[in-house]
Length: 380
Image (cartoon, rainbow, N blue to C red):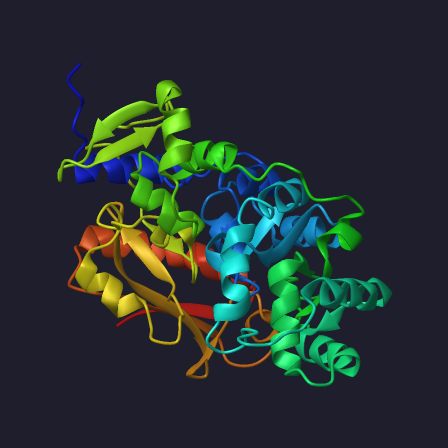
């Protein structure tokens, strides 16, 4: 049977559709987070913008309530990075990605255990007892563990516990308009439920394809941070659709998943820092050029906020007040007094008047979502 070749542009339209970016959807934030298999959340507030740009009538209180009600949590998951996920996905996905953290336990260049002979099982038990008493910051956790293991680096001890126990960051961290230290406790303690027993990646990969596919095995590995996924894909292959990209690489997909035509409309959209749409494929040509990727990805790991024109990353944006950068959702952004909040739009190259008008309208909506007070849009 001949295998259909999918153009890069058609892969772009499929990605936009599955990422809820072709129209705003009338679903709950919890349903969206589930469909997206979590949202990268190294900074506390970008997921709010990520949900606003995807959902109809989304309000910050909806996500804040999920966090305070313990229906959603932030913890290290795919790629070893912090993700916002539902409580159910926290318990289901963390055991699947544990190999990432096992590899990092001793090898981490900054805080790995290296040649340490510390009893890791005892370390984990001690850490769990400490955090059952109260959530702790990484510094406080390291110092508390060092009292029990005085010959070890406190930072390495805290890092080791994070790699071997699922530590969730608790509110008020990541609540809209509020600030809070990154204090953690274990997922089992916070959610009062155990982790799932299943460690095979099969179900997780099917969900990845539903949200990011069609995709190669290399794409699956780039998104998850896991290696050697060929065996899992071979198990799933009889139930998958198989295509090829323009380079001849095999693409796997969920049968009957959306594959819009190349000319499907793609509205302008503002994306937050760290949006997973930019981080979830080995070959990112379907969403951003290599030239523009180098502009966005900084040496210190920050992935800047972007905007899409005709489905592709066309520039960056940031919020400022009195010329100083502020983060959407921070107390500095939502306060009622002071100079206006400014959304600076920086296209990578000249854009059409039509695109500029659409971006101006969308930027005004984003500013109204961020603050109900004085604001303005500026184009670089």
